[in-house]
Image 1: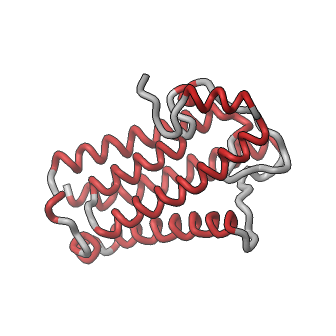
Image 2: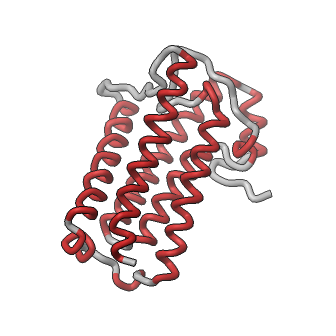
Image 3: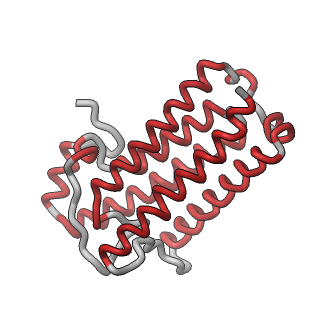
Length: 203
């Protein structure tokens, strides 16, 4: 199992990044004629959130690459032994795979409205069909589930830190986007907000 995890985790996140960020960004950029990555690079609070997102992604990439090339050192570092069970690891692998598929479907359902950040220069459609009938933020939900799965597969303090930090940043981003969507779509968004929960509606 350890050898499988050593290869599965880094390749999972590399493929996740290439498909859901690079691939989808390229697809949308060709359709709208601009880069869909609109995270600000200024010194604002929102710009700081964007910077932290990038730092967390970079740190996650480095951590998983170290796991690939230095498995003995990384496997034993800050491990939470009480959670190291095959059942948890298999559950985590399933969650990661399902989350990846979920995120890609949500991104494709957004079509030209998909952005990394808030686009103040181009009004986008409010997407309420498909997975958005069950979650107002299915992409963030999918990423959160993938980080939960990662922690179950590889229960370390560092993996837990990625889960907690990533979740906090996503919750901040979600609320910033909610303010923007309320301003852009008004009562339509208010009605949608009442019907569908922020992360998951089970009815």
